[in-house]
Length: 171
Image (tube, rainbow, N blue to C red; front, side, top):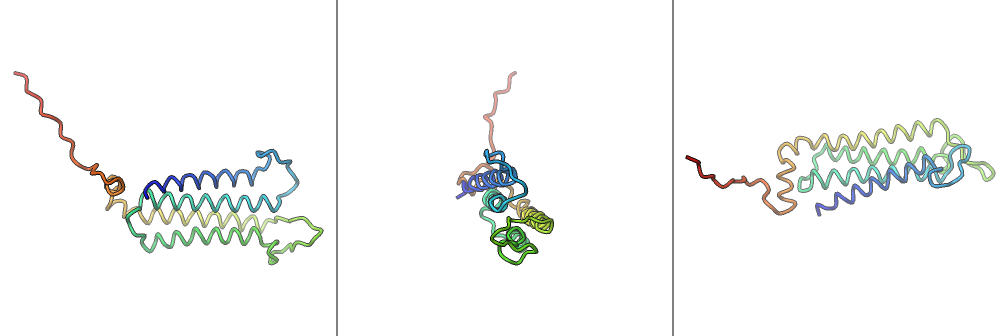
């Protein structure tokens, strides 16, 4: 199960790539348009969601595999997921019908300053949640260092003392 941290790295890399393509659609060969569209907003949100989930997966399965999460780590996880939820709500506010510029059939998507501030603040909340998760587990890592965790992960005793063969003393 310890190799599942590689899935976290893959999720984070995929999320970063999708978020980058959503922010800069010219990278994919699409013609740049004026403003930001629905597909761009959805790609940025999906990309950042994958990035945060990848970070949480990597941290859990790399540093805290056999260690149950404490209360502060659970709060950090919930902060990260709440930030993703708020980012989705503020990014899709006009489409869902509770934004300031409700979309009609003829109009194009209007991505306003309040939505931008809401998404950026929510991304900051998610990032803060990941930091809370890892910093709250720092005292656990002191009690069970990574070398000791690798012993339980790989099933090998890496902490044994290496003994060198005694050398014959030259007269």
